[in-house]
Length: 358
Image (tube, rainbow, N blue to C red; front, top):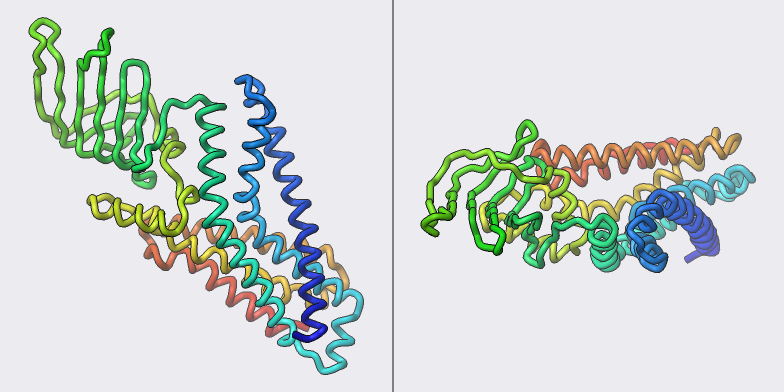
């Protein structure tokens, strides 16, 4: 590794750490002032609030590392361009290609770091953080079991949902239990599935059992469709379903296989499975994109404009990436393809930008 490469790597790392510390501080401060009232209202000690915000730091890191790579590359090479170091290097026979290697190496290193954070830290920390928020702060009665089934307990009712598809707002393997004053089972409904339409839950292909208080016997009848009153919305189910970020790559893969082996649609989780591999590589792309922007003549004259342009590019990437994932969730793009579309498009943009660097 040449002296120039070591210099670029050192400077990029310094700027990255500065940007990371600043962004994390702002993010945590905003989140703190937004949610601290909820912790105070339920009487939780500040230690639990501190634990919640600390547990969210790995998730915050995963969101801002790509932006940090982009901005640190932009600032490092932008200052070199502004201070005429780039002109001096070009005069010495140094081309843009000499900068690509350290940028790719740095981006790949951050990609590995991002992957490890997503695989090791986030599944553990987000599961604990979500438990603090849902159970201790919001006092929600729903919970997820280790088998990822959903149990909802309310007044004299217990509902079990084997699988929930958030895209279709559909439930599968539903069992509703109703209890009397002595906790005697008075009503039970078993249904193969159900869906949410016009503010109502409709169960399909089920069996209903009702206790006759006079005879003590159960009357049974089947149904094709039945409207039921469930005191929960699809948004409530989405909160308690175990999320993809709470599982590592192996757990998510096994979960997809389990769901599909039972005959359910696991498209959402399959898209997220491929996204766990595709998203970390954005660090390499953001580094190349930042390099191409930083070496522009317009950035030499107005570095803040280049930084603002880089932030806009990162913001547009996130919107486009989320849009592609949505197309995958809706099965408009194949699950293995959807998470890679944004990476492919922005890699092409970064390469074209480098080819036209001043």
